[in-house]
Image 1: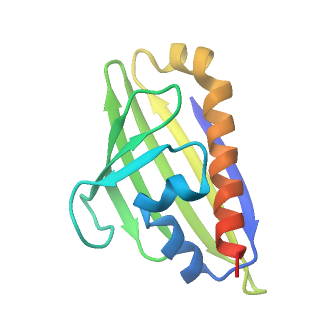
Image 2: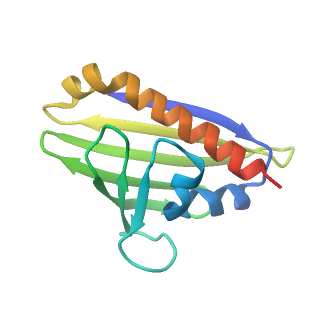
Length: 140
């Protein structure tokens, strides 16, 4: 199962990167995350982990598996029967704006079942994250 959301943001890539990688502040701008705690101090780097709590979902620990500041980070989380991969990619646009591409891919023996019963929720959460990121970055 793969879900994707794309949003254009009237802010440069450095601003969007700074907001997007400040994981502990996500609950301030997206209702799809009610609590976020980094499990080690410092900037987001390869191997960094964070515990996210989301409505209607079990809390999950996400580990950064790829990172290319200020353009992309990918993190992964595992639960019984399903592995989740969250992609956060930023593309600078010619006019100083940024296109944010958010994707969630789920694999494993229970991924189809999770997608069937939770797909609408996953799509809604990705849309909330994209909209919230845009609002937060465009704020003065």
